[in-house]
Length: 383
View 1: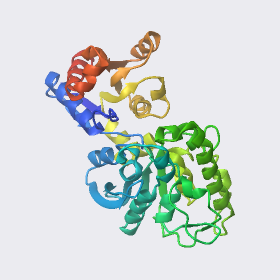
View 2 (view 1 turned 120 degrees about the vertical axis):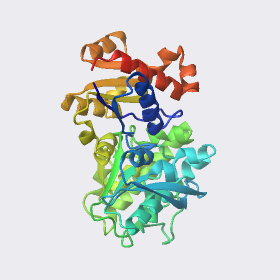
View 3 (view 1 turned 135 degrees about the horizontal axis):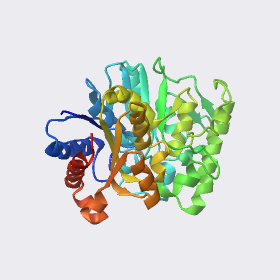
View 4 (view 1 turned 30 degrees about the horizontal axis):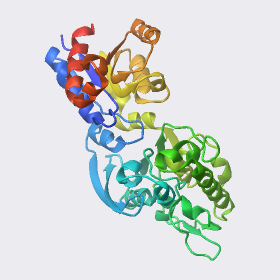
């Protein structure tokens, strides 16, 4: 009897993309159940890999390569995705991501900017986008989105009326903001995709929590934080500003991607849970209808996976559609009681590390072990 299985994993960061993960699980599944209908739906949470996941899941999606300025000015070719409904998808990691740097240090921590992200958004807006989804994550900068806004026509000026340098370092000389040159944005707006809830500044803000990952030393965090606070204060006092811009700095997620969430909020964007927005873009709920089993996966499946990550969303949608649910992960960081509780609830869980005998062996041949896991789950799950 043919069964319908939907495979909707996130990427295994550092080893395999979401599309590669889905394809490998499917190959393994079909070895055990060659007559089944297996549907691959690569997923993402708004961070790195979002454009690739959506491009691989939406029929008629078009990938467009656009040259932009990288985080410290070195040109990069960023991949944007145009969807048939007029939505474009832009990923910060493609334009201003930390992986685009050879390395990070104090210099890059203060110099890196999001100007390339703004250039990509502008390109999409000028090429017919009705809405732009902006994936936030893996940022190299802590500039509060000022570089992005610069590319969109906003001027950030010092006491002499000159434009300040890009990056957080320039924010300390900021005296005024001119929003009059902001380019027309898509009719249905911008949607910022994120899975973090940090505010712009403060002890849980972008600089304090994420600055050290971007090369900042402990003594640099307060300076980075002060730059972000200055940006919010001056933007709030801009004549063209609408509403209480300073209050936006306290919004959960405004600190995403070095404060880029705040920069987007300041020009009217909305923040959305990344996994939810990606699921809507790829039509995941519709694809799950009639499924007997839904398999998701990620590199590490643990307690945090329930906090807005891809597995928690896929599980909820699967339950709502009455389908069984399975997880294939690189490693499973749950205790015995937690795993037993999930098993009692009908959730099947496989760990590549356990199948391979070690985490290193699983990482060295991730796709091979994903196939093994797919076949193992196909033989073990009763459908």
